Image (cartoon, rainbow, N blue to C red; front, side, top):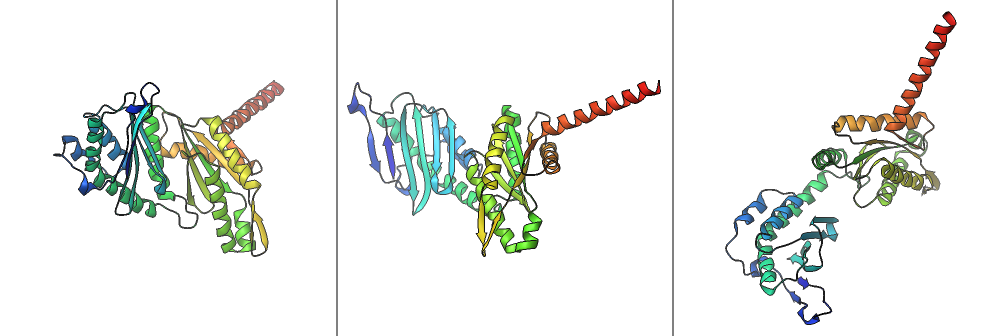
Length: 327
């Protein structure tokens, strides 16, 4: 179904347009394909397809933004800045949900412009469907079967993408490595099946305490990684502490045994010189520092740096005292 909605203005409420109509690509009265339509098949990435579509249709109908929502696949994208007046299209064909597209701008849409938008959607139909099918296949290969989280392969793709975005737009990016404390003891005492259930429990808690824009991955064993776009050190620490406390205060019952867990975390913050390995290594060093300092805690790359500086100062003072004593 396609629904077109625009806000009613007090001055002339009769100008509001509301219309419901069935939408199938073969029913659309499509005109000859515009030049921009050919670019929609250049990529299988959903954002790329929608960005090309937005730039193309904006040549025919002035637009301020395009929002895309697909609740069944947990996809939410926005291009541009949302304005007052909107035209909303819910796309569905042969039982396959393509999601909702909402166009917006400051001025009301005319009937001719709405007709142009509807015609443009006929060109988007197959590229968007193909991109969604590609994402389904890719998600399946990048999913950890035990926890349902993205796996190491998914992490490698995501960190490459996030680092590229951070470099291009000069944005902050935080990385958190999470490790379950003394996990081997659980496997040894309660069995690997209990360990698997505890892993899935911790994964669910991590997922539930993160922001919508955060990404969490199981990269192997009892180790997880969290990527936080647009999050500085303070924000990353708040997210980490919320997750740490949630895990520490939770437990599960397995075959009559109550099992709980604590986690240690290490945080690093992206700098302009960073590549994948340097960002990961600093978080890993911070995680080791957290393990060394009692576990069930959070340490950052700055904690590690300050500890090294303190040791250097202490070492310098000792050498100075030895020199003075020798004199």
